[in-house]
Image (cartoon, rainbow, N blue to C red):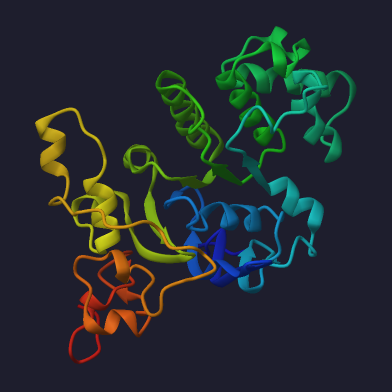
Length: 327
């Protein structure tokens, strides 16, 4: 990796699963890059492929095809090149804090395990690092002796964040880290993530279905639908100028509590139908059965990605000019 290059870059990334019901194209030709220090939000409904992308980035899955390049090389088939260094540099915070922690291990052992695995410290130095990590996420130092069953769900997620930070990573994948928590704990954790990113120069790949969270967290936002990215835009522009009908539908469905917030939303777009079965995908554009603006060709041809300005692109036939250039 040289100066000016993305920290992470996906190119035509695909992950397919064979099931008794048929082939599931969970991720089907996704391309994006992630610059050092930024937050890319991957947003979509359940079944859109966002968690599959997360698990491919951290090496739980191997890609079916395409490239996923991180610093030293292609990691799409697993961490074959410099595996210890890549595993140290890429960490993940899981959605369910309860199931992601070993109930038979004390908090100190959970947070300290990555330190031991990567041989970063031992003995008193390791113990000191563990206490500092626990305190850095807002938990008392005495929590190192507690077990997960003795603390709440939000505190468990704080432990998960401390564990992810133990190796001093450059990239943290956040797989819906606040979805199982109450509103006050969500705010606490989001503020912590923002502070940690500033202090440690972290890069986040933030997986979520909640666009409201992305308004304050994301540098850029990518919308996923049926394993494909249908729109990518810088954070502010995304909310001010949404282009794809699916993006407009999602934004118009966000609940608000004031007239001022309501005025910022796009014109109400009627939500039609549900996301199709992943083993029985529609022909052409996957969104056309639900789209209020569908054109005759939408059911026949999957649209390419059309650039719409600096950092903004959309996969939709509505933005193709007659001369074949982006609209």
